[in-house]
Length: 336
Image (cartoon, rainbow, N blue to C red; front, side):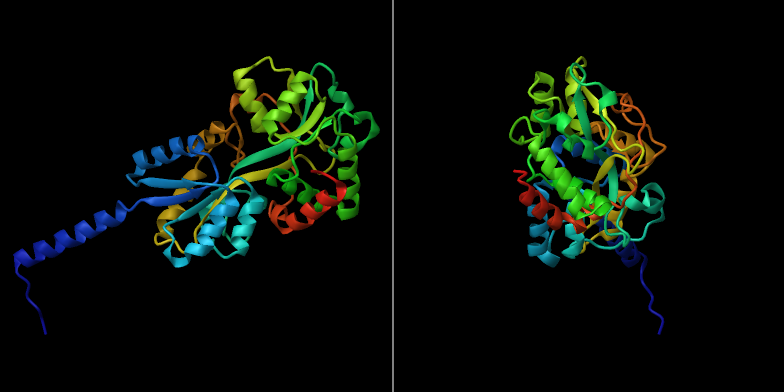
């Protein structure tokens, strides 16, 4: 049976369809973010300008955000989880709160060792956790590897951040993957024996301690030093790239994945793909003085001034898989 519709009815139907489509397009994307607001607001505001899609965010530490996603289940308003460590993304994936996605754009932009094999999360920027040293009291020629900081020549000269920070837990997890647990524990015990001061609460305090002469060497994420150099260009502290003849510099990521219960996974995936596009890579990394995941995108001049280095190609998922082992090892070794 053929149904005849009057022109007026057809017009009303088209108006309803157009209204519904506009409403869908205007639905905000919600990001649960471990990154601080100043580091994401400019990026998300740019996305809104370019696409017309509003991005809203809620910030907290990754464990809290992951628990919140698990508790909210299908009722969550979140579309994307953004964290500052691969270990946290691994944990989120294991909890089932991230959705596998297939994206040629994400796979082409993000190296395989910086993304989940099942497509549940992808690196957005790279973070190097490396050695820093006093340019007034240490010659670069006397530095070599992470493990060498356990040698007697650094007794009373080493500073570390607390073992409670996931950045150090991920570093040790990857060392376990490389060296094995027995050898890694020897190194960590040597570090603890060489400490010039109790572990610091954050990397900024550690850099300040090296600059002030409280210690000569330390291990930090480079962007902490970059922020300080931006304000104090003549700071007497610089970066050393260790293990260049062997494994390479420890790398972690700031990364993200689509929330499993997202009501708009296609739109969430589109935002992730936009974040790894070349122009956005440069801006995203520069906001926190990190390294882009796209190898062809230049780093900020402050970061680039430290020179090129060989990065450890190990898969960053090891930071999560071996995290519990790393925590137990650090406890045994007396790293507070």
